[in-house]
Length: 225
Length: 208
Image (tube, rainbow over all chains, first blue to last red; front, side, top):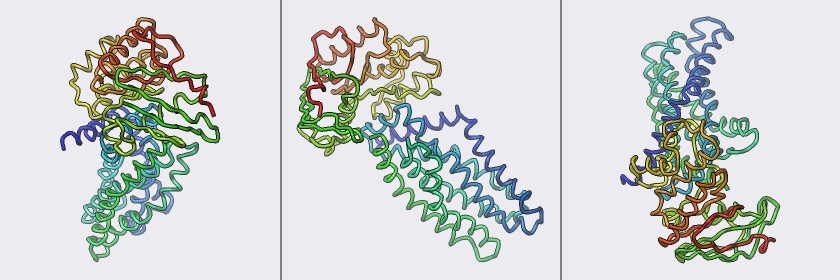
């Protein structure tokens, strides 16, 4: 078991270290999230009731777009410098380090969004009792976005104009996550309880965790061939 | 023992070679020769299992490599054109990562020794982006100085960008590896001072 964890830990460590050394990229993702969210009051007007109503959707769409913004970086550098080939030649199972890469990517790009979201929600005057649900929905939902997005990133690896194609490929897949994520906060605010939405998101996360790394590994094998 | 039978390779629409047979026994070194564009790199990638041949089969110790990938890749060390270095990491971090990701447990001291031996004592703590081409190459090659447990070395142009002393040192290392029962498959355009001249496979002879 500890032998199998070796490459997992090695890839996780390295990618977190790289995220720290290249933290400007991470900050750009977060700044994008904040800026997109802050644009909405300018666009739709500063009517408090309206802002309160659209807040969950706005936060979720912004989180989804900033996830998309960083996705293409997930495998690109390793593909160019040959690290991906070496990883594929590792005797350890491919899915293991794929999960490690996606985890590191989420910790560097998804987790900051989850942390920043409550502060931004207050800008929209969202009820304080709903902040917990918002954080929970993002904490369950953004890893799904990272997992699904990783499959798209692997499929479009090395293609010209891969970034645009990646967006077209994964945005439709993000729709259910968006519906249940934003829906959770709405359901809490309307009094019907967010439990069903959150359970569905949790189920989606487990499903994505089980299947996406396999698809991702297969796509990476094709990409280096 | 690495054994390939009746390999054919097509790159895009371009047929490269067919009917290629090869055999590398313990202690043997095979040099894949041929003009540019005849599929040397493609052949090495096929031998490693990174790419699939159009037809034919590769066996490692009489087992097809796609049937027991793990055993084969545990015995294989492949160094390709790209040095697999991340520019933000130091040579030491890069080397330790490539060992750990490959499933080798290697102490930091041994990694440092290997990097010092290959002539990077001064560059241990510098980010890889400031290294010269030859120095980048050396970081990749440092794995050879600790990867002796891996039987089969597949090296794509290992001598490129190295100076004369480093070429001699590397040739001696490869000869030693073979003398100890290891196997080496490599491509190169330059004559290196091997202890024993390697067998040559000329891809121009099996061109499609």
